[in-house]
Every structure is written in C-alpha cells, then in structure tokens.
Length: 308
Image (cartoon, rainbow, N blue to C red; front, side):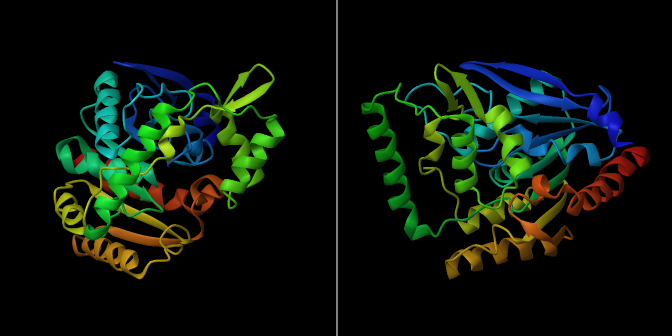
C-alpha cells in the first residue's frame, strides 16, 4: 500500500511576486487535498518518511516555506513572520485550486496551520499539529524587547555583506545540522539536506535564508491565541512528543500558557495525545505518529465527506 504513494512523487512550483514556492506532491491528483507545512529551518523533506504511511486516497502537497529548502528567499529588507507565511499558504492553495483541504503542520508549520485555519476556517476540514500546540503565546511584557531585537538584527544584517555565506563539505554540513538538531537521526539529517543544501564552487552552502534565524517580531499573547483557536472550525489533532517541544520548555510561565491552550483544545472536544519520541518524531520514527494521523484523517475528514 505504501509503495503506491512513494512512487507518485512529483516536484511542484508556485510563482509568487518575489520568485517561487517549491514543493513535492504525493498521491492521486484528485485525492482529498492535504497540505503539509514543515518546521523552522527544515524543509518539505521533513514529511518524506511520514506521507508513505498515510491514507493513499489523499493528495499530499508539502511545500518549502519561503526562505527554506528550494523556495525563493523574501526580498531584501523584508521580515519573516507567521502572518506572511499564512498569506503564502493562501497563494499556494489558490494556485492549486483547493477550496477545502486538511493541513498537517510540524512546529513552525503548526503555528502557520493553526493561524490559517483561524483566519480561513471555511477552507480547512482537518488540522494535525505535530509537537507544537499551534500558537505559542509570548508573555506580554516580553514583546517590546523581542520586537526591538528582531528589528535590530535585520538592520544589522542589511549593513553586512550579503555574499559571505559559508561553504561546507557535505560531511561538515551534515555535522553542523546534526549539532543544531541533536535528536535528528543520521538518515533524517540526509533527508533534510537533500533540499537544505545548494552546490556551489568549492562545496555546499545552506539554502535557507539567514534571516529566518532572526527574532520573529510579530508575536501573539495568550488572549490572541485563545481567540484564534475559538475560530477554528476544523477537527483538530495535537500530537505531542514526550521528549519534544513542550517537555523542553524551561520557563514556568511558558509552560502555563501552553497548558491553557491545550486545555482549550480539549474543552472543544479536540484530541491531544502524547507519543514517545522527540521534536522530529514524525521524521525519525514516523510509525509512532502515522496510525494516529491516519485514523484522524479516516474518521474526521474522509468519512465526513461521504456523509456530506
């Protein structure tokens, strides 16, 4: 069953005002559409191991978000923010002609997915959030400091040389990615590097835009997060890893805010489950999450279509 999905993989490109958004598609052209959004500093290869284990009657499209993978970087002087990424998702689905679809988001991708589902609730029928609660509230008193830092980082970057990207051997690039994400398996590192590196004279450079590392200057408070969540009409499945993002939070107040968001999902009859694994469990060990996602898609999305 999985081999049929594996074989039908194709590249896709969506033109945007500053270049293109690249991605990959699996499954039948007319299958139920599922958009897959990767995490910060990753790329759409993040879903390579998971998608072949999911229901074969779906059409899966995973995109490299702008500034990641093979997609164009934003123009000079432009900030990366979640609302801008939501607009990018709208560009992609409009280009694909999708008016009703499901979204699977990991980490940063789950934040974009949740925000899109709140702003365009009629377009999303199922929402899977992988090792991230969707919104990540910032303590209100921290916001001015974070905004200032993000603006200063951009201004500093603008003054610097644009062409001084470091060149690596493949082995050194793999080592660097591994050090930055110690929970990634060797195979997962290689998977992400397929779209994460660009060959250049003398070796490889990382394809992602250095500006994605800057502090995100558009923050949401707990109140905004809860208001957004209340507008989501799709069925929601939150899959947390027991050694993942939430478990790794060191600040007590961040834990409290996340707990309130998760309680709100449960209060709305959405599913919040925890699996053994780390932040990239969907890539390192997809067998741990695939049955949950498959069951969710079958019962909450595909079977609902039959009754509509």
